[in-house]
Amino acid sequence: MAVSVPLGFISAVAMLIQVLIFVYLYRSHRTRFFCYFVWAWVCFVVWQILSLSVQISGAGSGVAARARNGSGIIGDLLVLAAGLAFRRDYRIRWPHALLAGAYVLVAMVFASPSATVIGLPLSNRFVDAAALTLGGLAFWPRRGAATAPRGSRLLSASLVLWGVHRVVAPLVIDGSESVAFIAFNTTFVLVYFLIVFGIIIVVLDRARAETESLKEFNERLVHGLGEGLTLVDGNYTIRHANRWMAQRFGAVVGRRCYEVVAADRRPCPGCPLERRESMDAPALVEVAGAGERQLVLTCSPVRQADGGVFLLELVADVTAQERLRARLAEAEQLAATGELAAGLAHEIRNPLAAIVNATTLLDVPDTLSADERVATLGAIRKEARRLNAILSDFLAFAGPRQPNRVTADIGQVVEHVARLIREERGRDGGLRVEVTVDPAVSPFAFDADQLTQVLWNIARNGVAAMDGKGRLALAVAREDREVRVTVADEGPGISAEAHRRIFQPFYSSRLGGTGLGLAIARRIVTAHGGRIELTSSPGRGSRFTVCLPLEKS
Image 1: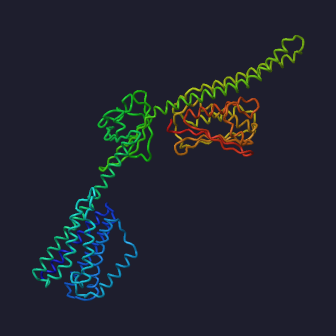
Image 2: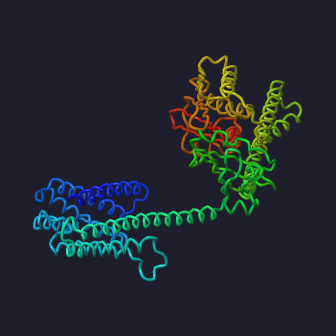
Image 3: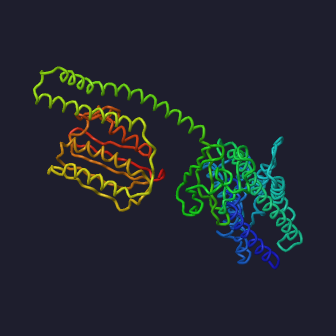
């Protein structure tokens, strides 16, 4: 006992340390075969601790001794499962677990309680030795395999030696204090540590191979992108760039990002680099590049291992798309102009016919009384004003100017439109104009004159729909990343057919209307990067919502 107890204590401590190392490695290398190894080593630790307690207490029989033998057998079977999982991706299933449990129970019941695992009956020793040997052979590299994890041969040979040790040791050892006992235990410790080293080497080499494979995949993905990709540090310096960037801009690593992509070689307007640590969503930045290139940068924060935050920029060259979009817009403009010309001819024909008829009457002397001549001249003036309104609206629609964006308060524009509506209908007591402005809406950039025209057209249509009597509500609110200005009336509503055509040029359900007001309004809002939404149903009023994105401003 003077020698066996210290050896057992040292072995138990060493095994426990190894289990802790395995558990630590398993947290970042979760493979099935390694999981089975971890549980096998837990069983061996239990076996070693129970063996030590039996030696100290001198109780060679009882539950502790049987549990000691059972834990050792379970550990051997788990080593076999680890080898099969490594070789064939084996997974322990319930039938296999029940069969192994039955074998362990039989071995615990029929083996001598005073025997160690080494001292089990011959049949049990051969089964356990076979489990260790087969588990070791499973780690030997396949014939013809291109690559094999480093350490697999060491692990395989060490497990086979351990299996041989299980069979040979009881035939040689004649006592717990003999020289043969000490020699074989020393050999066991050496083989045991070789197994541990082999397991660690195999796990780490497999993780290294997976990391290299993932790295190669990421490199192929990054370099195969049809767009540029750069990693920019806090000083605007490009730390990494893909092949797309090198092909279009040359060597860019080490240069300032704005010197590469911006035509004026200055930091891009709206660059999110300074606020990268507080970003919660990717930011889009439009950049005018050299050679009349149009670039769009999608910027996202990336945290580094040292705690710093870099900016990952996806660079898209949209020059061709923008040119194609411009050509399509020009073609649409020409098509729309053709439709407008046809509509304009139709709208002009009626006033001109009325004017021609009136002048014909005026040319014939003594055919009209004084009052009839005054009425005829008034009709001519009325039709002339109508022609002027049609031509003015046509020019506004056919050739709209680009928005002159200036940072302003949209609430003041809405209040101004409401005041104009009240002044125009000042003598009508049946109209109520209400304005609601959300204080959370801060000033942003837009063309105040153009948006005044938009809201004026929509509001006047709402008042006309109610015949000047009812409630007209104007509201300003912010929703997500856009400002929404709503104009709601209590008129008769809009039918499904009118809803479909209401933004078309020269479509009007109002007597005397040119049918261009809403078409102009939508074109102005579209130029601001926004849209107009319409919600209406017959008998329930109408709600026009002008949506303006804050990013475009």
